[in-house]
Image (cartoon, rainbow, N blue to C red; front, side, top):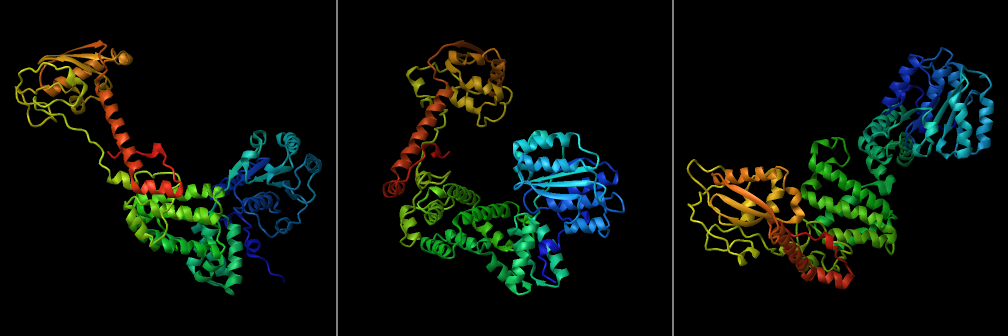
Length: 569
């Protein structure tokens, strides 16, 4: 007897044996038990998740000689013939190779005749999205008013390409990709029944490599059995999977953490000699960084039987959260731009050198960067100063806001207001605490620094008005403001009363306020914008004058993205 591959031998023959599609099984089981049978079903999902298998089980449920049931006997002539693919009233058609209107017309002409062997004629159209527009139009009338003895089962990996007129006439079921743990569990059952020895970690590796497809997993398992000589162990499965083996990715991360440029390039050359796809390597590296980020944020979410659980947790403790995010972003962008690189090796190594250059947890000087790479050339940053990662920014000292002085002899922060002195009333000493309402009988002073006062007030929505008011004059019990005409919409919205209440609460006394349009525009909002512009200019100057950045621009043609420069707060 010839050998039957595992994917065919272990194809589920009943709803109970189907793995990972419980939501679809439940719906179909209830419909069959209640005899609520639709004339057209649409199964969607990626390859190898069970669309064709589910179609055959449904065909057996409809045509089993014991009656319509969610549990076909599997032994009658109809069930056996459907399993073998020889049942005349069950037709599987590949729409990718029979996509024309002539093919569809021929099928529909046969559909009008009564079944030959079974209770229903069941037509399964695989990859139905491949049909032409005319073929869909030919099918539409039959789907709308089908003969009572015909059932249609449509399957597709791309439901977006199926016309809505077809979708609206079908019951739709989305088959999910299976988790690697579910696949590994099923593979363990298969190997136990086949009396083949195995190591659980090897099955986890196969389950992860199958990308949610049970059929692909069984095919890989067949390959692993042949490779290992009737046994499935971790070492041989890792060797068989080759590029999918993540050990080299862990080595890359360890080398990046140790800042060893020579070793990093040597590992890249070793990958080239092993013919590892650098596109796949960048994709796998991004996936690995995603797993490390999860291990760092939620360690308990990493399964106990994960093949690299301990390694993931170890690296998660050595890497900062910002570092993981930065490396992840670099890997994504490098994969996107791989086709623009001189060759894949250059594109991949440039991504590694970017990671080597930018380390948010350890801002290094140019001299340290050169010594860390043991003589390796300075890496090319090509396109960006990374978020919150720049030696120049880290070492620069941006201007900070000077607190408003409470000494009447010292000038207030508003530089423009100095040219227009305001009267200084005789006031009582200011209490030490400014957070709460003053005790009874105690009042606070006001030195005319409206900008500083606005920062201390609890204003809520009235802050917009306060920040756009220019102090015109003030006394112990009366403050006059000028509001720029461009901000006149802030008046008459109830903000004036809220502002007066907050000021009275702060000073501990009744104060009258008047507002008028005009003024020179010397408002807190204007001053804040000036300060922000000054800080931004200082940050940009620090970046452009930094020796390390200038060397990268000169030697490697690097470019600075102006919008990425932010002053340290």
